[in-house]
Length: 546
Image (cartoon, rainbow, N blue to C red; front, top):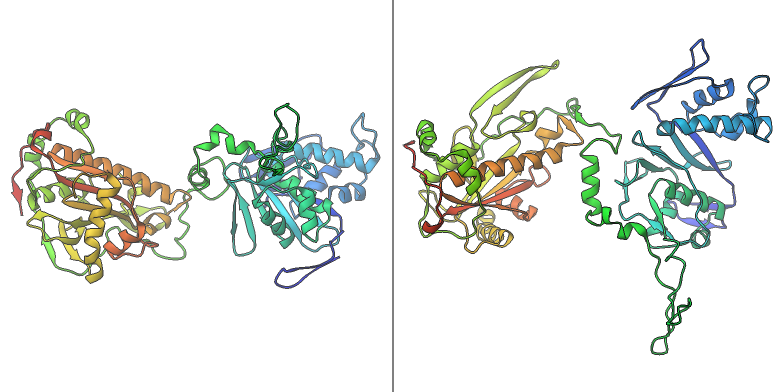
């Protein structure tokens, strides 16, 4: 028997204890056996299932499964049915085996509620558990051939929850909980194609234990088998027969295993991170809390609706007269049709008046209000010219000014309530100005350096305090809404707009003086003046109020 040190280091001979399958129900499943008709009601995250016509052995097995993992063989042997509770007709099995078959048939109907686990005989803990995380979850372990290559799916993620490892994949409808180090050892060897025999030879685990672990990983899609047509064949010679081709006197080894998921056209467009982000920020393929659940409400207060102004000199911006803006603007359809990303600029300078009108129309706070209800303390929220889910308005805007008449070059925070710029930046931030302008030019493929670069950041806590699962996806949606706003208003004003498709998150933090973990950069926008020949949208400047 193998020994394990407190640090989990392998030692000793292989552990030949038998691997045993255990069954339980998800922790959120309630079992009601009180019906006078003998039916059992299972209530879980995804609704209720009423099981009719089940015998006393099945009812007792379900009750025990709601308390924790059980061995169906042991339960069936302990609760041998008599009389009408007999084995299903046509099964040539003893009473206890018949009862186990009846239990398995019932569990097959409610697989979305059933947790499959493995343990070693006589052990006081589990090896691993497959937990269903969606109503469509199904699990039917089939052992791989002892010499058939398998590997971890390229979409699988191994992380810690503080109490052990969790293996997740956006392509799987299960979550694998690795309770014991033995399961982690096996998963650790699946980074490269490997056979069950090779794993058992390298670890102090029996071949049967490794086979059972691999079978469960394959059943849940966490591991994938090599394609049988390519994974076990060598290269073919010119005569069409299998063999190894000799080149320059060297005989190569067998061909590398082929895995279908690597060539699946439905998966080739996805990176593992993108697919996980998509699946976890939408509904249907996970069991995590989702929506306005206020996950942080009892731990910390919400972020204020309006960020406190940073220290620094303020530069008042001109305010346009909106009636005159409406009268002078081109029609919306014209603006929509003429909207373009413009990457070269005119000789005229951007002015404080134009910049002030642009920011006022696109980003200002139109009003500050209080929300009462939901049994929670009053929460302030703002009204602005662009949409924001839950009225969060978590986005902030910092301007790196290179050339704007009336505005000193440097880094400025846009104060949306006061409609002013606040000059920020220490010596280190000031040195980042040319770097930020150059980054924008390269990222957007600009022919000329822009007059102004707007860095969009997110006070993420404003969303994560209220929402589970979709907070970051929501802030990216808000960036899209704001970007369209900036495009349309710049087009209506005859300016040259261009969104930045990406950016250096550390450079954004250095430029704005923020902590990227608290207020990360999530978008950017370049602005300048149009060339005379590229101003198809007429714009009549409005009167300006200071």
